[in-house]
Image (tube, rainbow over all chains, first blue to last red; front, side, top):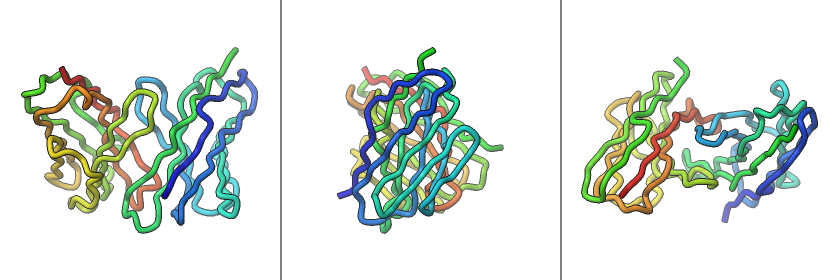
Length: 111
Length: 112
């Protein structure tokens, strides 16, 4: 089977750094994507790792290690507006355009 | 134009009604998706169209009927829905592969 596991909730303070982990069990996939979704809104694409290593996009970075079946999203200089749900997602080999999402992590940023 | 649009934003329908959800993108993306999302849950894939052909149907009940009239448009026809079908219906598109998906704002559906 294929599954992605994320912590259900994370709380951090404004200005801090937070890491949201995603561990997976899947036979093979093309890469690891991350999406942000605010309450009442739609998911928006944040980052994609096709290869192992770190990808940096402004305050957000994402990391993938296929050998460890593990990835994470790193948010730096947290702002109140970063309070949202964060989903990791993969497109499995042999699944066409099918995408599997993790259950999501709700991030609460406190002042 | 870098957005996916969806209409209507909100929809209330009875169990005997027929309605349609519409989605449009003008980014030249060749894959388009319908997702269903319940509160505090991840998006749940329903259908994928690739190059205007239905490539994935995730065993969705026949009361949901997708249609892709052309490469920019995607419809979801609804008929005889159940109250448990109430959810946020999201449309998305991707340029290739599906690793980067662009979501529309969604249609919030309530079935009475």
